[in-house]
Image (cartoon, rainbow, N blue to C red):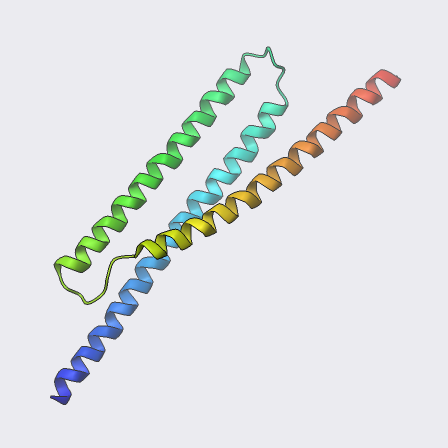
Length: 144
């Protein structure tokens, strides 16, 4: 009886370790995607601000932004599939754990939303700085 209880405790600890490792791996991949996305959005916004309204380059930048949004959607769909398969694995092999719950997903979604808001603030700040720099350049040019 004691041996069975010890084995259950060992399995419980192993399940927790496995779930924690899986969660950390998923979170790290989400951070990588978020960093890439943020970097690209900032770069594309900066590039867009340097273009004239009639510039053909705006179409090119716009297409690259659409490609970036496509990249995000594909990653969201892939993440959702990974989470569904993980939940299925937990149910199929009765590992005693559950898949990542809706609560986990919502909590992570709130974290991502918070990061997105921070990124948008950074972008707005960079836009203001770029506009101020352009205004200063224009003022210096007209003064000369």
